[in-house]
Image (cartoon, rainbow, N blue to C red; front, side, top):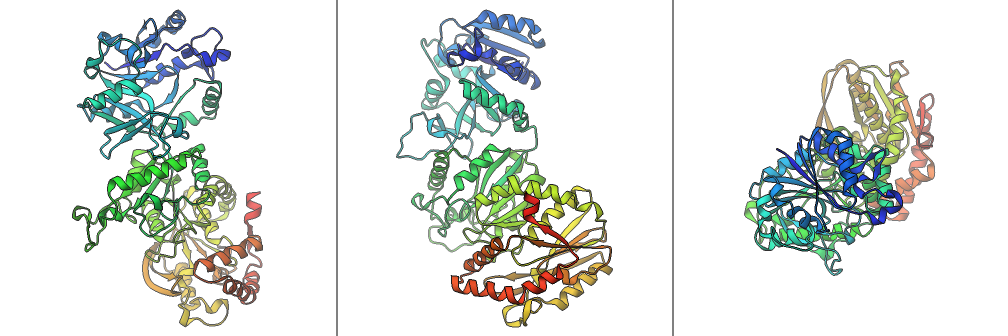
Length: 632
C-alpha cells in the first residue's frame, strides 16, 4: 500500500477572516477545499491509504470526508488531542504507520510529481527519510538545508541565520518520505516535536542518513491572507498546473563568469565574486515567469588545483545568498570541474580528462533538460563567450550573447548567436517580452514563403538583421517547413585584403557564387568561413552546413539585398531601428574591440558616409521591417 499522512490539525488563526468557523485544511482554493486538492493529488499518484491527523474542528473534517465518500480511498481521521508538533502528532499514531509513508502538511498547496519523488526515495533504502527541497525567494528567513554532491543532507541551518556566513538557497519544503523504523528512537517522546527543527537534525547527529530531493515544483503554504491570495492567483492563471515536472518546462541556462558575475579570469576565491548590475532583477523576473533558471559553468580551477570543491561551493553559496537578498534564486547550479590539459602545479590528475560536461560539450545542458523535463524548443542559453553559443547550437536550444565579460570576442568557437544584447537583464527582457511579440509578428510574414525559396535580409550594421533572421526562421519552422540562416559576415575580407567602400569589405565574388549555387545546385554542403573580429581576419572552413532543396534559405547581412533578384521567389526585407539606438550599438561594439571613444566615433562617421547611402538604396522596394513598429 502507499500511505500519506496529512497533518491537518492547524487552527488557522491568521486566516480567521477567510475561514470563519472552518478549520484551516478546508480553506477554499478556487472552489475546492485545500484538503480535497491534496487528497486528489495523492490519489492521482496511486496512494490508497490516507491518515489525516486532526485536532481543531475535527468533526468538520470527518464530515467533509464522509460527504465525499472518502474519494474511494481508505481514509482515517485521527484526533491527536492536544497539539504535539508535526513529528509529535505523527509519532502518536506510530502503530498505524506503513513501513514507509509520505508526510504532507495540511496548510501547503502543492503540485508535485509524487511518483518521481518516490522513485528517488526508493533508490536509497538506507535513508531514514528523504526531504523535498527547493530554492525560494526569501531564503534569509527560511530554514535552509545543506546537501553534498551525492544528495546526502549534511547540515541544517535554521532561521535566523548568521549574517557573516553565506548559505545555499535550499529550503525544507515540508514534504517527506519517511521510513517508520527510523522514528523508533523517538517513539515514546512527549511534548512538542517538529520534523524540521528537532527530529531531522537529531537523526543527522545520531548518524542516520537523510537524503534531499531538489525540485522546483510548486509547493507553498497558505498560512496568511497574502500567501493564500498568491496561491489562488497562481492557480487561476494555470501556473500551478504547469509547474509540475509532468509538464515540459522552459529553461534559461545561464553562464556564470562574465554573465552573472564580473569576469576576473579564473575566479578561485569567494572574495572575488561580484554580481554584475541588475543580475538580481533579471533572475527575479525569470523566477516570476514560468521559466526555470539553471547556471552552467566550466570551472577548470578545480582540476588545476587552484580551488577546492568546498571553496567552489562557498563561492556558489555567496552567489545564492546575494541573489536571495533581492528575492531571486536559481533552480540548479551545474558545474564542470574538469580540464583536459595537464601540466599545472597542484593539478588533480583524476579531473584532467576529456569529459562530456565541459562546454561546448552539452552534458550540463542535457542534465538540466533531463532533470527538469526541459522543453528543448523553448529553452535558451545566455552567455558571454563563443563557447556558450556553440554549446547552445550543439544542444539545439536558442542562444543569446551578452556584451559583458568576453562579449563573444574570445575567438574559440565560430557559432553565431540568435541575438546580441548588452547584459543579462536585457537578455531576460528579450526572452520574456520582445521575442514573443517579434515571433507573433513574424508569423504573419511567412504565409507567402514556400519550400526552397530564398529570403534576403539587409540593413545597416547593428540594426537587428540577425535577430530578425533567426526569429523568422523559428516562425517558418513552426509552419512545418525547414529553414536555415546564412550570415554573410562570415565572408568579410581580412583587414589587409579589403577594398574601398562597403562592398570592398566583403568577398562579393564568392558570395554571388554561393547564392547562385543555392539557387541551382541543391542539395549542397557549404564550407563556412568565420571572421575573427579582434584580429580582423577571415578563417576558412570553420564549419559546414547542408542546404537541402526544400530548405528555405535566409541570407542576412549588411549587403544581403545586393545578392537578391527581383524574382517573385526571392523575398526581400530591409531592417531598420532608431538611428540613435543603432549608433550606441555600433559605438559599444567598437569600444569592446578596444577602440577609444574618438576612434569609435570616427569609424561610425566613416560608415555613415560610405555605407549608409548604399545600404538604404538597396532597401528600396524591399519590405521594411521596423523593430519599433513590431514592439508597439
